[in-house]
Image (cartoon, rainbow over all chains, first blue to last red; front, side, top):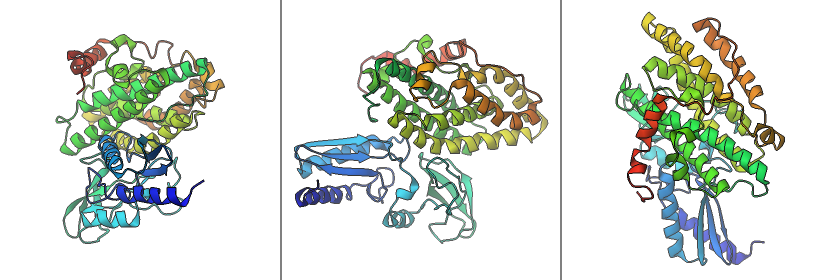
Length: 171
Length: 259
C-alpha cells in the first residue's frame, strides 16, 4: 500500500526524471517522451521501468545510465534499479501534449494521431504518411522517406514553406 | 536487458523456448548484417538511409532476443551472437545467400518480411509474457519493413524489363529456401503444447502461402508447392561462412574484451 511518504518519494523521482533529456532529441525529457513505464519506491530501492521507443534504440543504454546516476544522487532509497521492458510497448500515443509541443518547437513534427478505429490497436499499426510542418503548420507535406537518421524519425518535405523536416515516427 | 522469461517453465519447456528464440534471433541477426552491406552503395541515397535503418532494427531485434535467451540459459548475449561457429547458427536457409543485386535483395526481403510477419503474429500470442510483449513491439516496427519490401516488389515488377527479369529470376531462385523460415523445430510439439508457440510451423507455413501466392504468382507465374525441409535451419553455404567470418572478426580479435 502506498503511504504518503512513498508517494512523496515517488514524486521526487518523477521530478528528477523530468530533468533528464532524451539523448537523441534533447529538447524533450524522458518523461514527456513517455519512455518511463513505472516508478516505485520501497524501503530497499527505487525501481524505474524504461520502455524503449524502438527495440534497437541505441540511446536506451545512455538513458538507463543517466537515470541510474541521477537517482543515485537523489538518495530516496539505498538501491537503484533501472529495468528495460517491452510491456507495455511504447507507442507514439505515450508522448505527452507538452512533449508534442516541445518536439514541434525544436523542428520535429510530432507523430500523427490515428483517427479512431484505424490501426490504433496494439497489434495493428497503420502507417499514415501524414505530418504537419513544424515550421509553418501546413498539412501540404510529402513523405520523402519513412526511414531517417535515427530509428524513430522519418523525413518529410513541406510544399508550402519548402522546408525539409523530420517527423518522430508513429509506431 | 529484457525481463526474465517465466521462471515457472519446466526444463523441457525452457529448452524448447531456447530453440525457438535462437531461430528467430538468428534470422533477424543474419538478415540485418546482409542489409547493412547496402549502406553507402544502395541505388539511391534514400535507400542507403532505409536499408541502414532496417538493418539497425533487425540487429536490435536480434539483440533483444539473444538477451532473452541469455537470461533463460544463464548465458551471455554477445557470446551467443558472436562466439559460435558458422555451423552453430539456426537461421533459415533463405538467409544464407549473399545480398546479390538490388532485385535479389528486394526479393529476399519481401519473402522474409512476409514470413516474419506471420510468425510474429503467432509469437505475439505466446504464453511467455516477455516474448509476447517483445513480439507485439517488434510487429509495429516491422510494419515499416513490410511496407518498404512491398513497395519495392511492386516497383520492380511494374518497371522496365531488366528490373522485372532480375526480380523474377531472384524470386524463382529463393522460393525453395524461403519455405524454410517455417522448418519444423525439434521441440515443436512441446512449444505448441505449452502455448509458447501459438500454432505449429506447418499452419504458419500455410498461412504465409495464402498471403504471398496471390501477390507473387501474377509476377512469376505458378510457384511450386513445397514443404519446409528438415534441415532448413541447419544447412549452411559458403556465402554464410564468408559473412560469419566478417561479422565475428572484431569479436574474435580480442575475445572477452569490453568494447
